[in-house]
Length: 326
Image (cartoon, rainbow, N blue to C red):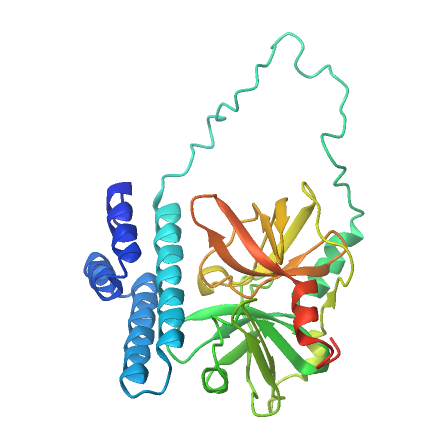
């Protein structure tokens, strides 16, 4: 992939701040045109299509000006996340043969003789933790929209799938989306995924402020019953504390299922922020505590903070106010 420098990123972000969304997409399409057969170019086509449909709906008075501006801002934020992701992935990797300096002075004469100790909070887990994680991972799926953009979702009780509002903005989008389970490599490197339709006519609710969408998934002829994928357990009390470890199971950039974990950096209102890695396509992933309970719904990268963030599940449950048992 051709390199992308900070000056280019700064220029694009300044254009986004000035709401020059159309020009931003044009500039990015031109930049990525030599890479037509890449996910990056496909994703830009998706953003361009979303903007075109949004403008058409506004011209036809199908949406209010307020709703138009909100959705346009969502597209702008997605473009910022996109350009940040491209930059992170284009940066050269550290040479593994040379350990990078951490700023910690090491005395060569005493290295290796100090007794080990727990640094910070204990993160020891019994090995059964891995098995429990594999069971939880079965409930996580890739969500693919008709415009080829992707997100992540996960199963809850009643064959309900939870993802982000900005993944499934309305019932029409949901009706054309697919939930793809078992999109992961087995021990031989094979992928044996199964695809299911969503059923917003049976159940669909979403909220833009908390950035969540909850929708029914259809059983599919010839495919395993949805019960095979189980459902995740929501943590209903307490919030993650600073330095707690969280794990995110996700489909970053629409790729096969991946896992990332790191420390919590803090909470604020309905949000929790953490260092665990995510990419575009990770939106809608479950954020797990150490016991594989879902504590948050991942939804975005925090520009300028080098952190990711999610909506606390407790806030989503409060918003649903008992509409459905999860």
